[in-house]
Length: 201
Image (cartoon, rainbow, N blue to C red; front, side):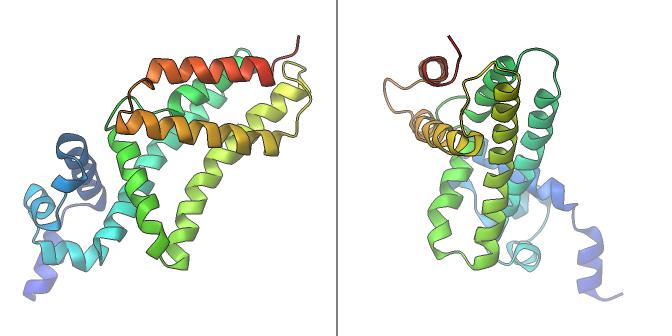
């Protein structure tokens, strides 16, 4: 067996690399995530990592896709919960907003967004797929609320776009630790907005 074949056979599973990348971002931030350091964490050379991921941009995007897959499972579970549509909408918002400053998932998102201006068409399509999943689930919640007459009669797709823009703006503030926009304050703002804009008298 050739040395290259032996290295491929002893490489850790892809998910192990992505878990290690996310853990590094959580512990040391994006500046602490290097191919050499990640390779040491999983017992691979930086060159070997590049063989599998090609670039750091690809590693970051795959790590984001893996993290979003886990969040997607949580989101689908909350959409299937019993109770009012408003309760499910609040749960969606709670899942969307960062846990606090330097939330690793959001820090990763911000970096991928920042790099997207130089990304190729395929990478942009993968990012759009992540955004699209969040959007479709929110549209479904809103449409159900309208049909059950819990919510005002709104265009679910347009309202979802506006609400997600609000959530994105607030979430960036939370993730970077902007004073006066902690997680609890943001959730209060969003609940107040939903009460005023969506709830029936």
